[in-house]
Image (cartoon, one colour):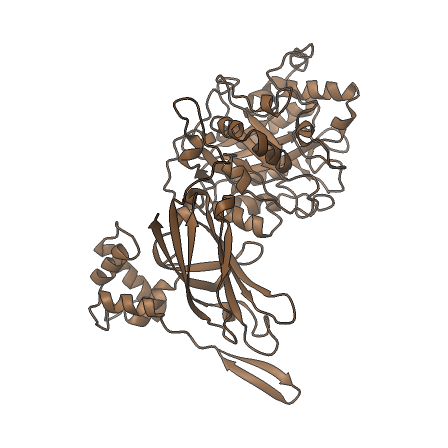
Amino acid sequence: MAGSYRMCVCFTRKFKVTEAGPPPDVKEAFFKYTDGGTHMSAEQLRRFLVEVQGDGDVSIADAEKIVEQVLQKMHHIAKFTRHTLTLDDFHRYLFSADLNPPIRDQVHQDMTKPLSHYFIYTGHNSYLTGNQLSSDCSDVPIMKALKRGVRVIELDIWPNSTKDNVDVLHGRTLTAPVELIRCLKCIKEYAFLSSPYPVIITLEDHLTPDLQVKVAQMITETFGDMLYCPECECLEELPSPEELKYRIIISTKPPKEYLKAESGKDKGNKSQREKDSDDDTWGKEPLDLVSDQEDGDVSDTDTSEDSDNESQQPGVSAYKRLIAIHAGKPRGGLKEALKVDPNKVRRLSLSEQALEKASENHGTDVIRFTQKNVLRVYPKGTRFNSSNYKPLIGWTHGAQMVAFNMQGYGRFLWLMNGMFRSNGGCGFVKKPEFLMKVGPHGEVFNPKTKLPIKKSLKVKVYMGDGWHLDFKSTHFDLYSPPDFYTRVGIAGVPGDVIMKKTKIKEDNWTPVWDEEFTFQLTVPELALLRIEVHEYDMSEKDDFAGQTCLPVSELIPGIHAVPLFDRKGEKLNSSRLLMRFEFVQD
């Protein structure tokens, strides 16, 4: 492929896109395992896969299949006379994102522990198509989220304009509503396309008892046997993802809590009228982040003169029976909210700011709470443009549901997508053991403790290719081929965070960097490898050319092709990097 770049009215420069040859490490590996020969047999490839790529389970039959796939893909022939790879075939195999990816695509973690033992891919206001104030509500973002692997869908449910049916919308904003039944049918259709593990629907309930009865009927009729309804009112321990395969789970506040909260509002608690039932505050940002989350909220375990209201509302018990994971906050401060009840589990929601405050003063209490219960963290109310926040604070404290605006985009969402590439992209990632461990005297992990370096990760960036297929020849520069560089770094606990970058390779669609970086990690279990490619622009802001984020704990050692994604997280068709990963124990 040749690109033409106009220099002036009468002069045009032409550049031909040439394929870069194999880097020295690839040549060295090929000649080592072929004993200096020109062709690599399936057995020689198997030895390479075992010794360099760390694939101890590969058989000779597996290697033969790879050779066959490479020859079919590279030479487009169904039958071939040779069953060996040349150096170019070997290089192209290593540089194929389909045949040689950097992480596994199968579920490989233990899925038999209670739900509280897992990070869960969680959406916030899952029905919004854009910003938080005026975008349309639709089932399309729900479909997109489920297809991407999201396992927790949030729906804010309100009476419709005639008060006889239920809509989904972001209350007290200009967002246009969508009917609840449409969202439920969408969830049923797309819930298990990307993963067999359960989908949890968190309801922000703003309904009257008669409409709650209607919702119970809608949910029951839509999901039928897919719906998980526990036999007892309150679970002592959450079931496992394995037990809940292909099931739908409802999580919200029980009805009587809604009635008591509404009663409190009617008595003049004006601040509550400005709040959603479980979280988001719209309007002036509160001064006291903790009280914002807890004043006026009543746990479903509390007793008061209103406690018999439930029996006065016929049919509401049917709605309550559908709730598998009870949400609610006890009276009092944050310390009280984080108390663990040995006889039941519940879900607690905290804003990103409230979690930050909790992490400062009650970090170990948060971790102890999340060992048994579910903690949901959600974006602060002033993120009107559907931006997101740092997810690592939540994960470091064991929060299972770090809720994100999936319709937004940006670096924090790249991290979220990266974390949930783990475990085959099934939407559930087992929390590291140190977050679940309890010492002989009840002690738990303290996120503030300074930790020693556990291991080092060596990352070598060899080369890149594919941009000339994904972008027009003048996309990056009107007058010459692009000047690419790669940024590589770690997102994780504060002590592990760092970014480095390669040199700039000028005027080249197929840049070769051949640079190595070393990252020392104290908590590799929560570390994410950040990779971004940019095009250097002397006069303006550098152009974006692709990104990805990979869980360090999932990286396969050896030389691999790393596919790149656009700003919105959609995979680019051809753009990719050739990289090498090596772990060194410290």
